[in-house]
Image 1 (cartoon, rainbow, N blue to C red):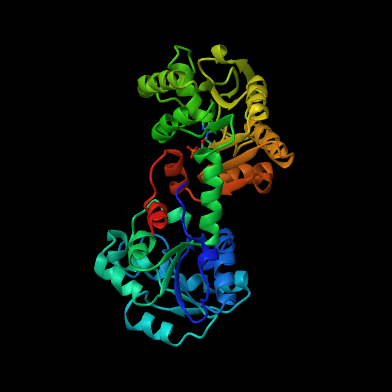
Image 2 (image 1 turned 30 degrees about the vertical axis):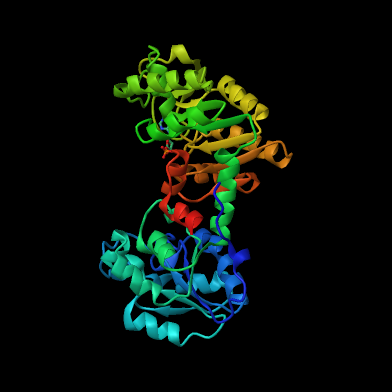
Length: 399
Ligand code: AMP
């Protein structure tokens, strides 16, 4: 991984104005933050800089206001939650540029933390407009990016600023990049990837990248059906993208050419209704009844998945093996997650997981804390798995 500067490279920062890009895009219901995980993730960077006497100025987006102020997308509603997590009262300015922001910054004392209003209230943010970036840059001496989850976007606050100010990775960004490097950058081999979830169509690039990089690719979830059907097996009423049969076959051919073993389910748990505790049975993969759908991979398949996890030194995981939100179709996901967590705890496995439902699935299995790293970044994590360059990261490595 190309080197990037971290907070360790920042010395003598007392009194310096540090613009810190953070991810505060937390879920809010009735004006209350319902999950403060993202705030907790960026707290170490904020606290460290504040304790060193810097003036910490937070930049963040919230929702998709499309370039104009929208009251219910104001960051003012999360100030209390940030105060609580930091154990420190922060300041707030109702604009991220212009006199409001400049006056608020000018009146900061060393160690103060100031949150500026939603960067996406200005069109210049998403356009990465140089004039807007310049306005943001006026309020800082140094730029720290701690928002990996927004690093797949080349926006003013995620990319543009790194060209204007000395740029550093915050602690969360640093941890994420180090974990991802261990996952796919320079991993200990063998590397096994588990990819599950609903559809192949949303993960074609990801599968194509992984078969070139990993030793074994376990395919589960609804997307396994497309691969199974592509081999001429009847999957009944299972979720299946029959039009992607050629794509599935091409991915399997690429895997073979790259020496990557594709691991598909050999059995499945089928039901006739998509609901919790629906009547179900376990069948061999070539015996799915025509009126039934596979909602989880079966016990023999889980055994094979766990065998691969047992052989692996590195595991990269995105997407559940089955419809984990409804019992008992969470069985395979929970079993593999628990086994991977145990292997990690025993020091035999580096396990990196991420992307939307994966975090929920690992939380459901009660093992998210036992993985080496669980990324809460959705799109950015997936783009990393696709092998794409993330503009917010690459600009830091060039800074
Ligand atoms: P994704 O967002 O692509 O990772 O997909 C996650 C979703 O895939 C979850 O909501 C699961 O319920 C769903 N899923 C996983 N396996 C299956 C399956 N065999 N049939 C239908 N949906 C599934």
